[in-house]
Image 1: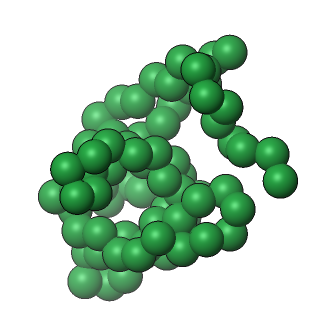
Image 2: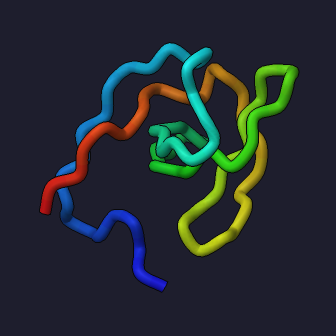
Length: 76
């Protein structure tokens, strides 16, 4: 399976109003001190977000405090 974003591509991330996030959005988030781009797979009513990758793997749940922006553009 081909990745959605390849190594070395320029990614533009903008601040996001968390109330506008939708399943399928790619977000910049911090997990255990490292920054990652992950796909929002589900949104819980309690304000948590389930994140995963483009290969179908679910990485877990994160809170609002761990999301810093939404991916808006990818350039080679």
